[in-house]
Amino acid sequence: MFTSKEIQERGYKYSKDPEPPKRCKYCGKDLYQKGVVMPMMDRVVAWISHERCTCKKATDYWERYDNKQQEIAERERLEEESRKKRERIEKLLGNSGIKKRFKNRTFENFEIDQGNKDAYKNSKLYAENFQRFKETGEGIYFSGGFGTGKTHLAVSIALDLINKGTPVICMTAIDLLAQIRKTYDKDRNVSEYQILQVYKEVDLLVIDDLGKEYCSDWAATMLYDIINDRYESCLPTIVTTNYDDENLVDRLARKSNYETAGAIVSRLHEMTMGITMNGEDRRKRI
Ligand SMILES: [Zn+2]
Image (cartoon, rainbow, N blue to C red; front, side, top):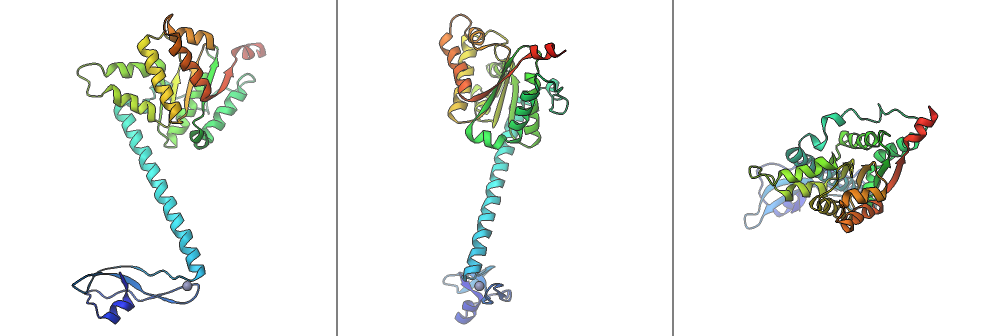
């Protein structure tokens, strides 16, 4: 690679004239366009950018410029990665893994009252600061009685992030397991491995209504596999459950697999902040 000045001095051939030199806006030095010279042929095959000035101010400018370009490239890479993940989820699970009946549960239509206003505020903060939580892999453990708004808030977070382009899967524990089970059908060309991978790699996994059904050994093992993998990859998981720890372990263990059930619950606590929603407060207020 030579500057147009060097090329002319050396008498290399070219079919198209180079652009005129530019002038460094800091020190006034002439900056020539660079050309790629084919060895042996002594001929310019392509004119590219102008040379960069090496004066202090120009060097600083180009350093900032290169950093900025790198940032843009990195952002584009991440966006591309997100897009691919979303496509994979869409292809394997459809609907971004979020069911129609969940789609109207947004922050906007959540009914705030004295008993749930902190839960609402913290959920909103979580969605707004998701990038930070994603870095630490911290999720949310929503617990509390039936009808207290846990699912609504968990889904609101999911929808908010989906709208921003974040790959999210939001499903009931039952549906999540059913999707894996479906892959065992002979005519399905999606493998268990593929489904497990999207659960394990998605930026945010929301598991709604954990413990609603008693778990088989198979189901508990699957859940542990997914949750533990996400814990090890430092990826956030949000769960909602109607049960306290003791009852949840009971339901996940189904009177036999207490070890796995206990491991699921303790892992979840390790990787989440707890939000307890107490429906009683609401009733008392009324
Ligand atoms: Zn200069």
